[in-house]
Length: 314
Image (cartoon, rainbow, N blue to C red; front, side, top):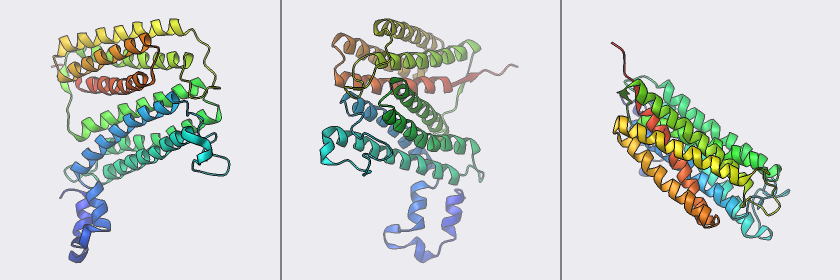
């Protein structure tokens, strides 16, 4: 027995199973039923949560943060953009539509987790992770709405990004579990090093949001900045990045694992992009790449931390 999905399919009449095009319930079960479906949807959720970070960043970088001046409607009398709002309205409304795709992916992932059976039994851990992703997307939408209603308050914008990073971390955890990527036994020092790297990475990303909030690309020409010292924040951010890379090097030396090597590769590329964007005056395309790099950095740091567990004492 593959699980609940096959239990339901086996109760269908032969005519229903063989219906042209596989319409109806069998089609739905093929989309969300079985271990392969859950693995696919977990990967889709991870990809979509990364994509929405980049597209959300492009809304800000193109000055379209208030392209739809209200929320949940785009304007006071319409849920959709209209030509009078121009390109900024189209960009902001397009990002809202993409959020619906993300919601759909999260919902299908959760349904797949509900249907999933392993050795005839449900997996509550997979349900909790998928449920967290499914609940996080509407919450993200509400925070996105608050950013509009507060005229792109930089701290709310930062919270909007950080929640996306939390969802990316949850999606990585779900991918590892659904693909049966078991943690390897490691020394206490190795486990501590991976956790320290994870904490440093989050601190670097948080400081990066403060740097962003003090600089240009506010999302709208009238949006206020946080008023903090951008140069000081940049130096603090850089210092934490160096600490993160150093901790990652220690992890690689201790573990010699693909997870550590992948994180180091992402960090090196991300650091290069960060230096280049600072030296070049923050061009939009480099800032967008830096956002992608931040998402991948959180994903790979999470993957590294989850790849090890303390070696049992005998």
